[in-house]
Length: 193
Image (cartoon, rainbow, N blue to C red; front, top):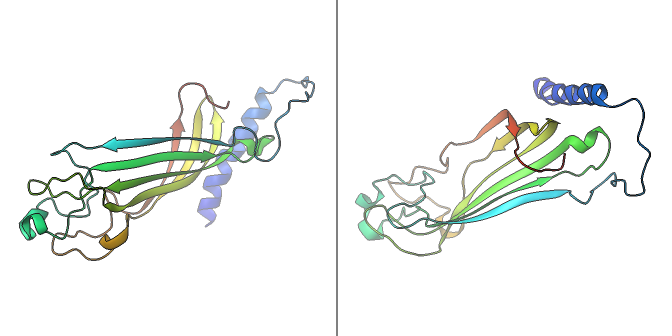
């Protein structure tokens, strides 16, 4: 826990020191259009995306073995290869003033839908497969760079597929399993700062 505290405290200290050195000695006059302290106008930022995978190019969340068709043909119970994906990212920056304005929380879910078995069954079914998601916290450093700590969770199955699906079932570890990362994120283009 002490290590995590240092991981979060060090970038915040660097941000504070760098902003103190770059601020000018004469303060700008306060205008009536100053940002609110809590939940400023640009608190939420994000994007959403819908993907369609054509036949023979299905999205594989690594839940079923690639040879799942050998264990039941078109009726194989493990048919969790996706035709559709709905994904997105949401960043929440709850503070508008002070050093806390650099802080943010984010989440990135990906919903998978479909019922396909490679080289055996190709359908356009919108059956729910599951959700893969991650969340984290970040601190803006400078010039589009952010320090981020991200937690990636195991794949969560939805509906009738939230059970053991036979020999071809690889479990719910998803493509990479559960992990946490510490990293630096660089944004390009026009953003809040």
